[in-house]
Amino acid sequence: MIFYALGQQVTQLVKGDIDTGYHEGQSNARGLASRVHFEQLQAGDLVQTKRLLLLK
Image (cartoon, rainbow, N blue to C red; front, side, top):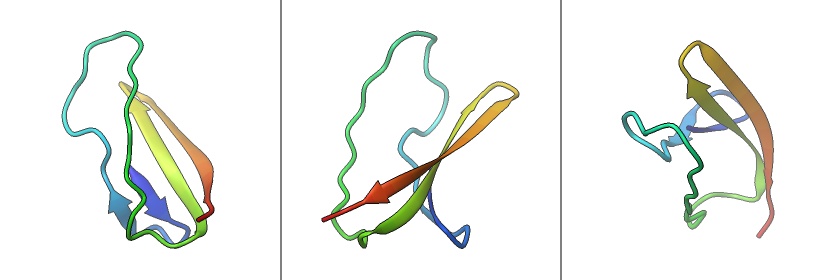
Protein backbone atom coordinates (compact mmCIF):
# COMPACT_ATOMS: atom_id res chain seq x y z
CA MET A 1 0.00 0.00 0.00
CA ILE A 2 1.10 3.55 -0.63
CA PHE A 3 0.21 6.32 1.84
CA TYR A 4 0.53 10.09 2.06
CA ALA A 5 2.57 11.40 5.00
CA LEU A 6 -0.64 12.08 6.97
CA GLY A 7 -1.68 8.42 6.73
CA GLN A 8 -4.27 8.58 3.95
CA GLN A 9 -4.06 5.52 1.69
CA VAL A 10 -3.25 6.41 -1.93
CA THR A 11 -3.28 3.01 -3.59
CA GLN A 12 -2.87 -0.70 -2.99
CA LEU A 13 -0.31 -2.26 -5.33
CA VAL A 14 -1.08 -5.93 -4.64
CA LYS A 15 -4.44 -7.28 -3.58
CA GLY A 16 -4.60 -10.67 -1.94
CA ASP A 17 -1.90 -13.24 -1.23
CA ILE A 18 1.01 -14.04 -3.53
CA ASP A 19 3.29 -17.08 -3.59
CA THR A 20 6.69 -17.08 -1.92
CA GLY A 21 9.57 -16.00 -4.14
CA TYR A 22 10.88 -13.09 -6.17
CA HIS A 23 8.29 -10.78 -7.69
CA GLU A 24 8.38 -7.62 -9.79
CA GLY A 25 5.70 -5.09 -10.37
CA GLN A 26 5.06 -1.73 -11.95
CA SER A 27 3.06 1.17 -10.70
CA ASN A 28 1.73 4.24 -12.48
CA ALA A 29 2.32 7.46 -10.53
CA ARG A 30 0.03 9.50 -12.78
CA GLY A 31 -2.24 11.57 -10.59
CA LEU A 32 0.15 11.55 -7.62
CA ALA A 33 1.88 14.75 -6.54
CA SER A 34 5.65 15.15 -6.13
CA ARG A 35 6.10 14.63 -2.40
CA VAL A 36 7.09 12.11 0.23
CA HIS A 37 4.91 8.99 0.29
CA PHE A 38 5.22 5.84 2.39
CA GLU A 39 5.06 2.23 1.22
CA GLN A 40 3.97 -0.53 3.56
CA LEU A 41 4.79 -4.18 2.91
CA GLN A 42 3.29 -7.01 4.94
CA ALA A 43 4.38 -10.65 5.05
CA GLY A 44 2.73 -12.69 7.77
CA ASP A 45 3.50 -10.97 11.08
CA LEU A 46 6.19 -8.75 9.53
CA VAL A 47 5.08 -5.23 8.58
CA GLN A 48 7.68 -2.93 7.03
CA THR A 49 7.20 0.74 6.12
CA LYS A 50 9.61 2.67 3.88
CA ARG A 51 9.72 6.26 2.72
CA LEU A 52 9.36 7.01 -1.01
CA LEU A 53 10.22 10.32 -2.63
CA LEU A 54 8.23 10.89 -5.82
CA LEU A 55 9.71 13.49 -8.17
CA LYS A 56 8.10 14.39 -11.46
